Image 1 (cartoon, one colour):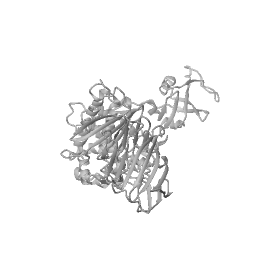
Image 2: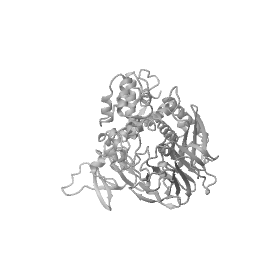
Image 3: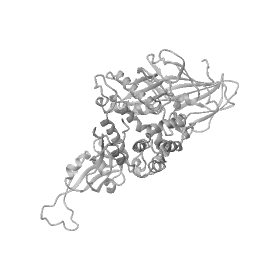
Image 4: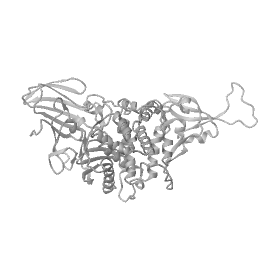
Length: 603
């Protein structure tokens, strides 16, 4: 094959049923001892995923001669070769992970991130790279979509693509298949939307129209009078039975959603009326698109450059993920895609997720950011007790800063974000930059707030700030599981998944994995009856529980009951004190006549 760049990859969808890509890497001018490696993680998803475990059959040749190849560690190899001749590596990658983070291949669809398939050539990763993807003979109806710069491609998108360096190469995922495709312009920038797995009811025109509104709102947020940093953009959405998520890239994003959440032909014009699932999808689109600025360009200084061989810890995910989570739904409101009531409902969900997690009192959101590599992507039954999400609490920190700035009347968080873009020139950012811009625009130091809200574990002043801006903080009865301090699964019975610290369930000794079989309730003593003699048990009624909401039915007015639990084939009787009624938050918009409150971010 013709070599147009010193580093040239050819990726072939070689075995659709075996889920294997065949990769050829040609290095025009190798080192005498050439090292190559496959990343262990993908930027935007902070977990070492060991992509090399799916790489098989690596060989190295120069002309007709095989080259000695040694594995150095879990993801790196060294090849002894003649630096005067091109070096050709060949290998296969197994691809059967349907998430947005890795690679997938079957007879219906292909998808890959370069971090899963493309070996990095040490010493030459800063130079030009070329990728060739030929049309698969076994799937003549397939197309290809990517935001990578095309050099020479056919009408279906197959052919040659180029990147300035390895970072750019692996920051452009590739979608393959017989997908739906549509296009729109946002503030003059071409955008493409491709959807795999869409049913016949899918309303593509509706999705394009609403996505265009989201993108234009984000572009105008960051650049009220200027142009965005990307010349084009591609959304790649995989619609499946049951999944949700996204991963941002510099000029594209990979998304996955429930098929039922796609907009449907004939649905109401309002996004809210179209259903909660569709609003969730629009929020995902808004979130990943906002990342085009906030983490793909503005980024933690620890990510400049990325180290693909190990964890890249930073304390700033509360800013990059949390502030993005604040703005994703807020921009939907500003775009007119949702109303105040829906925005408050979404904000209520975020607030309750934080307020109902005991881990908020244990770990700061800065430490949660640093520990993302250990905790966030490896949740277990103790996660809610030991950590807090930098997405949700980070979003509330953004809300508190925004409301504080607005209440003091000197600036808004919008202005802070744009000033950070200018200060850091759309590049690496430190927390000192955030503090400096807050002080500059706010007219005072915000060090106390950052210390308490970001680096501390005290409660955020949410209720005070929301009330001051005319938002009603109402109290609704809490679900029974929350009152008990439990999270359960209810399929053919009740299985305890999480026991929250400080709740009645923890005091009773329930544990994750318990099967809650039933309830034993003391029979009320007849009026005037003598107390039971010492050593003689009072009579009780025992009931089988199939759902948690049956508990009040059988317990009646009794507060002291016995939980009948199966644990590791043993039957246990655990004394349980039923809680007094508790409440959960519900936020509601301010009345229309309330004009005295400071400006509301959704306006």
